[in-house]
Amino acid sequence: MTVANDGGLADRLRLLGEQADTDIDLIEAAFLLSARDRPALAIEPYQRHFEALGNAVSTYAGGSRGMPPLALKREAMVQVISRHYGYRGQEDAAKDPDAFDLFRVVDCRAGSGEALALVYLIVGRQVGWPISALAFPTRLLIRLEDDDEGQRMVLDAFAGGSELMPQDLRAILKSEEGNHAELVPGHFDAIGNRATLVRLLRARKRAYLVRNRLDDALDAVEAAMLIAPREAGLWRESGLLNARLDRVRDAVAALEEYLRHDAGEASRFNTSVLLQELRTRLT
Image 1 (cartoon, rainbow, N blue to C red):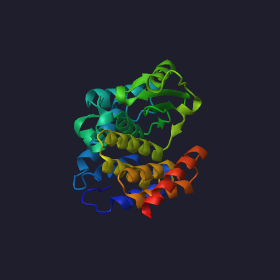
Image 2 (cartoon, one colour):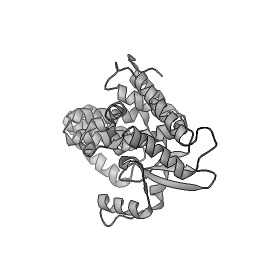
Image 3 (cartoon, rainbow, N blue to C red):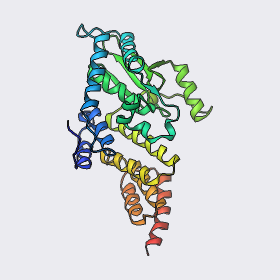
Image 4 (cartoon, one colour):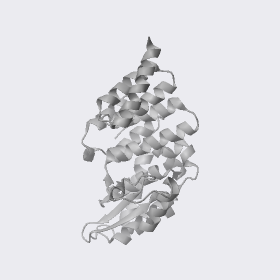
């Protein structure tokens, strides 16, 4: 895959948005998203870096000698990614948009939980292991599996690939959503490639908003819309940000598109009220 000097990044992301979820190549998508900020950057060193990560993990786990046990899979990923190569969670990631850019995360060996989860996912899939992101609400966690034994292990890439037990997950949820929050089965559903990338971009949007960089926040949402054009919530986010930027026509168009998608009654009512207000500003 070549990204450098490619003027059609948006078109290539749009093509990914039309693909079936399982056909989306996570590393290609992540490289394209990073290249939007630095389109002239040579990507070959990053490609070689991920190849080296995959080869080192495979070698640590025994190379081609069958599928390793679950504990060895985790140990190989932790030892190679977090310890040998030094990838770590960046404490101020929620306020630093660069912590969600895969190229910059590779350069610094530090980043957000979403970006580090992406690193683990990419490497795990390179070596052919069953690995997926989870729908856990407050941070992007990954699940490593053993098909033969039916065992599963939840890992937190931000915390160096630490294994999380149910009590750990409950504590995380309550600390971030309040004591009323409880684990539900849906928190452990695997999410697809598209949803994983959208979570990364939404988290980056929030980091931009912390810095009051509204144009950049909107750009992150628009990148997500290229990958997930039928994700209704993204149209609403685009509309709200355009409204804050006083781009009223764009805001109206985005919110109208949002209403054409399935939306809950409460959200539909609130959006309709906002649309009415925005339309009066156009007259």
